[in-house]
Image 1 (cartoon, each protein chain N blue to C red):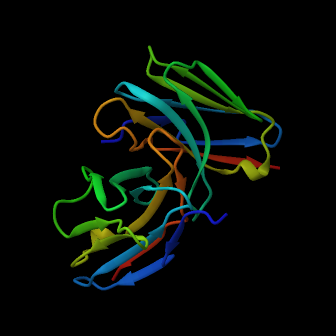
Image 2: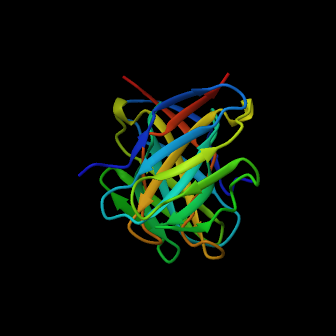
Length: 113
Length: 113
C-alpha cells in the first residue's frame, strides 16, 4: 500500500499566489523527498529533507517535516504558470532496503495566468 | 551529461508477447531502480539493483517479471506473456549511492492490446 497520502489531490491557484501541499506517512523514515512530474514526463527531484531536519529551503520552495506527526509540507511561493505539474512526496525508510522510495498519491497543481 | 535514458518511450504489445524495457543510468551511477505508475496514481517501487546484483525485488510480481543490470550495458526489465493489466508507465531511476536523490528517466509507456 502507498506509504504517503497527499492533500489536496488537486489545487488550482493564480500566478503569484502561494501553493501549499501536504504529505502524511506511516512508518519511520530516513528522509523525505519531493518530486515534480510534468505530464508525460519523468520525475524531477526538488528537495530532500532528512529525519533530523525540520525545515529546508531551495529557491521558491520551502519544505517542513514534523516526524512526531509523520507529516511534511511543500510550499511554493510566488507561483508561476510553469509550476503547473503533479507533485509527489516520497519517503525512504529506516528498515529493509534503505534506498527505495515509497510515493504518495500526488497533488495536481494548476497555476493560471 | 546525459540523464537517465529509457527506451523505447512507447511500446505496444499483444497479450502473450514479451516486453523488454531498457534503462541506461546516469554516468557514474551504479544503483538502478524500477517503478511502475498507473494513470492518476503515484509510482510504486518494483526492484532495486546494483551492478550484477538484485538488492530488493519486493515490489516485483512473483511471475512473468524479471530484471537485470549486467556488468556491461543497460538495465533490462522483462515482462513475459504480457496481460492487459501490465499496461502502465514504467520508470527507471538511478543514484550514485544509497540515501541519495534519484534521477528519473522519462519512462516507457507500455500498452497491451
